Length: 122
Image 1 (cartoon, rainbow, N blue to C red):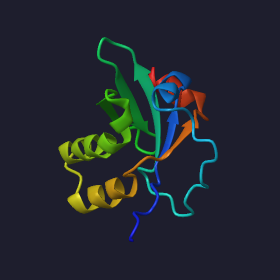
Image 2 (image 1 turned 90 degrees about the vertical axis):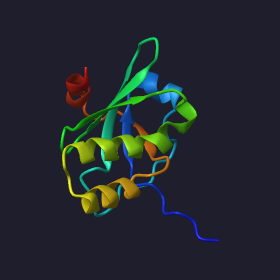
Image 3 (image 1 turned 90 degrees about the horizontal axis):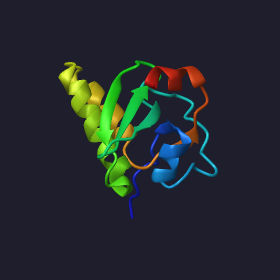
Image 4 (image 1 turned 45 degrees about the horizontal axis):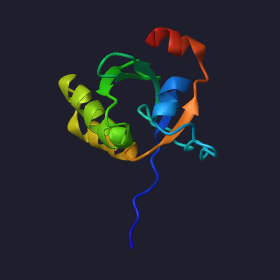
């Protein structure tokens, strides 16, 4: 049986968002030796009647807003929203597919390591 490779996604979330997504990853895998620009994201929960998640890439500062509900499928839906944002910016499709396919699936949910990135999100 052929399994998909693990996701390269490093998802730094606030405590409130991590609680909605099932908590922080207990033992995250070491980051890839060859990280790509879209591997690491910071995220913040926007509390509204219909909660949203503001996700920002650390390398490009590109921001994507994704509906939280249903939280169980959030990581399944995230790559499509990122791909749509990149497509809207007229990024070449080869770049989009190479990066988005790499971060598909549940990545490591980590605590925020850079408070300035959280400040930018707020």
